[in-house]
Amino acid sequence: MLKTRIIAALILLPVVVILAQLGGWYFFGGVTLITLLAVWEFNRMMQVKGHKPSLFFAFAFALAALLNIQFSEQGILTPAFSLLFILSLAWQLFQAKSSAPVVDWALPIAGGAYIGLAMSHLVGLRNLPNGVAWVWVALFSVWGADTFAYFAGRAFGRHKFWPRHSPKKTWEGIFGGVVGGMVGAGLMTLLFPLPLMHALTIGALASIVGPFGDLSISMMKRYAGVKDSSHLIPGHGGVLDRIDSALFAVIVTFYYLTWVVI
Image 1: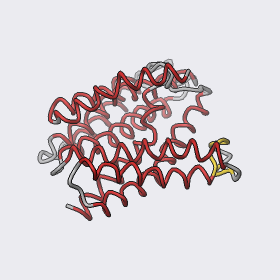
Image 2: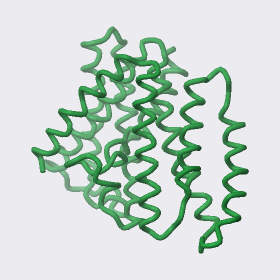
Image 3: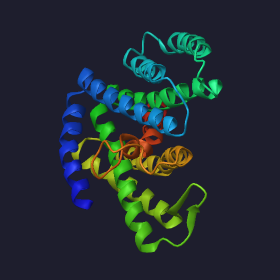
């Protein structure tokens, strides 16, 4: 299993690096693909539970969120979401086989809008001044936090963090994750001319909110009765399993930068 995980990571990492460096529509396309795969996984999990959410409208809500950040001056989010609310609700009226029509209508909005809006902030990060550097700060904060949390939890974990949602997470792992997030962010200041204090702050913030993104997706998986969101990535599970922590972290990073730094 570990060998498979390492091989998959070694294949995917260069792709992420290239897209992040290229930026523009290349990066947007990569983020869009990841987003749509994650939305598909969400819909698939809800189908396992017996619901019948519309994949079309889930994709549409996610794409509207992504296009809104790419064309930020046009402000398309409100009209696009308003139109999609009307169309999706009207469409649901004709779904006679749905035993829970309100839930089936709401799920594409919940999955598409949540994942799409969160991932749109990753595009927003890349579009900021010195954006490629801040993208790496955010991502290495998440990866550093996940790595340190895992090893700290295994070595020192005694006190459960939130047994109801994650029996394996411990406070020791959480604190280790905060250290790891700051280390990951701090390392990026060696590669890019970034203010160390802001990078460390982002590392701390991302590592604090990241576990809640993880727990949120875990809650959805438990509801659906599945272990992984899918098996798209060998040794890693699904796309949602890999980006769950980042969904919260990129939002906090984006607004810290736009409200405090830039």
